[in-house]
Image (cartoon, rainbow, N blue to C red; front, side, top):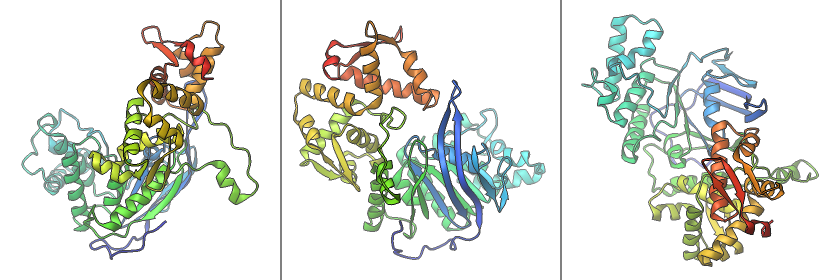
Amino acid sequence: MTLKPVSTTQGRPAAGSAIIAATDVTKSFTTPDGHALPVLESVSFTLHEGEIVALLGKSGSGKSTLLRCAAGLISPSSGSVSYRGEPLNGANPGVAMVFQSFALLPWLTVQQNVELGLQARGVAEAERRDRALRAIDLIGLDGFEGAYPKELSGGMRQRVGFARALVVEPDALFMDEPFSALDVLTAENLRNELVGLWEGNEAPVKSVLIVTHNIEEAVLLADRILVLSSNPGRIKAELTVSLPRPRDRRAPEFEALVDTVYGILTERATAAGDAHAAGPAKPAAPPTPSSNPLPDVSPGGLSGLLEILAARGGEDGLAEIADELSFEVDDLLPLVDAAVLLDLAHTDGGRIELTPAGREFADADILTSKQLFAQHTVTKAPLVRAIVQALAHSGDHVLREGLFLDLLRRGFSDEDARRQLDIAIDWGRYGELFEYEKDEGKLELEPEALSVL
């Protein structure tokens, strides 16, 4: 998908030769019980000279894993990554990285932290010093060379991270959610400065690859956006951004592209739908806790979204709702996913509309809305349904949480398995489906839950 060019981008030349190429990259991790956990599946892309590419996706899309494969920090389970046409067999020599966490050594000064990469490459002390000071000046920390990380604000520490990456003059600068740990104003300032360095050809890099979950950030920075689907990650769409820099968030073309990306991220494509194009449709596999994970939202937050929609006549644009609430639209996406999962709303492009069930839920009193939530959760949320059914079939309607954690680890990492169970517990308790005794790690079925099955 490509928007028609609005204007020729000034500053950088058009994309040139390939720096990094990923071909059919698939990556699986092994869970503690020996099962394969697929994270990426058959992902291919190329990063060229003179371009900024954004990897955009929700949690579970494998975008950070893909970044690390391209950096040579981890190896694909299958497929390949090449740098300047040569297959990678270790760390990518043409890449420097900036992470979400500042990853500075607290016992070293700003200058010493910036020199680390040069020192590892065997650069002589005098040259290290000169290059480090130039990089520090470039990113606006002149005068703080002798400061320690604890003396710096979050934004200043991230500037040190940028200087440390830029000082080695890499072919490709990789950034993994580099602004997400910063406050809104600091993040916006750093983004603008990065764009200024890039457009002014001051940044000593030939290309940039950035991982983000923030749609507006991707549209603000990137020349191309690769949108990844989740569980496992696949490239769902590729969009070219031809808007001139600096980009105006309020411009109709900018808003149109943001809406396009929202539409892609909120689509719920099904395997059966894809099969129609290839031949006779096969019966869709029943949803499972790993194929349909629970969005990380609270029942109260979901109720709030549905009530807002009801007050707006039952339908509105995601961007308009987010703007009125002073949130990023990305903050609404988990709530939207939950509403769609429970069949309380559906999406069309960048708009969301209540279903009849959603209207009933939004108009109900508290007690009725909890009963409706319980019904929809057991019917539509595979993990909650699995827990309720398991409790219903146990002798005393009590089970330990370890059972569910072990099962979840077959499709999730340890951390994500714990988080999925915590969300399910939150939803189940709200719907009065089961109780949870944290100290003993036990779940107990509520008597009323049997009527929902």
